Image (cartoon, rainbow, N blue to C red):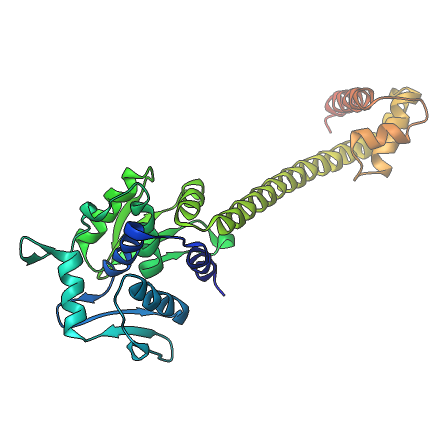
Length: 303
């Protein structure tokens, strides 16, 4: 199952809406039906569990649809009602204003402080989708009614969620990309476990990115150090081929030979190989002194 399906299943399993909130929850679904009229209403879903849940939600609101309203397709399933008596009641109860039908979100239907949460949960079950956590952070609601999208965006903002809007084809979108905001919204709608999964995935992702950056940085530094080491070796060998050993003290000769024999070792590792207890800083100083001496004498010889 997808992460979206898991979120919706958790919302349905945890829903404890009663009375006015139960009506608002159904209202959230209805506003995102592709069609609502006095003669027909329907909604499509890949998840038959959502349609079964919706049919039971109608019944809890006093509207019995019957078993034959759900039809299964190869990819998409449909809940469709063509009973005029039922359709006209739905339109009258939820969408009629001053004897005119209007497809808008009317917050006058919300009679308590939890009704908005019940509505938004229903809207997500009807039209919401969320990306897989390992692929990114994106939660959206979609509808072909621009006014419904505008109203939903305003409602979400009143609940403390900063959302954005856009259009994709014929659909108007209301979406969130901030991971923390998505976590809060999932918890708000009744999916705290999925919110925790998203949070855990974000932590894993952040740690993985930090490790990758550190490894890349260390590899880059190692590459620079190896390149510098081979440059030193080339200089030392050219200096020694011109009789340069006689210009160095025993300590400097030991340091030069350690560098030549161990091109891939760091300064600290070279210091550990030395038998005189020299530190990393001391090894760096000796190699720098060898470079200066080598360049000085090679310049004098015109090499």
